[in-house]
Image (cartoon, rainbow, N blue to C red; front, side, top):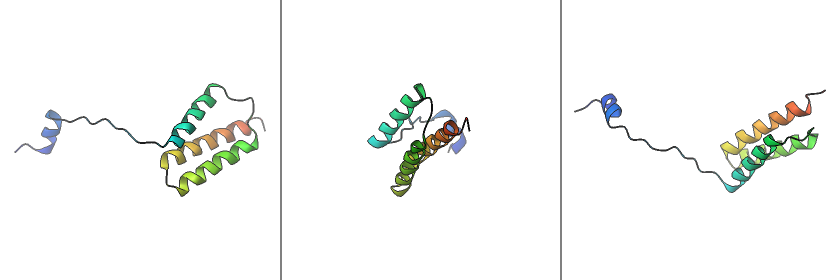
Length: 85
């Protein structure tokens, strides 16, 4: 019998990695990409609240990808909001 390590080297099966996303996550991702292309001159404090609410909803409904994304957006908004203060 062939040891597992040799089997993996010679008869490897490649399975594409694909995650499923909700339409809400896709919309939020599209907004983020568009936002990166054209950032407003300044964020206001309302941006921080929006990202915090999205994070809370993602945490409540257990959507880890959206949770990570909203966390990143919150950090970006903080950096922009407090960059000149």
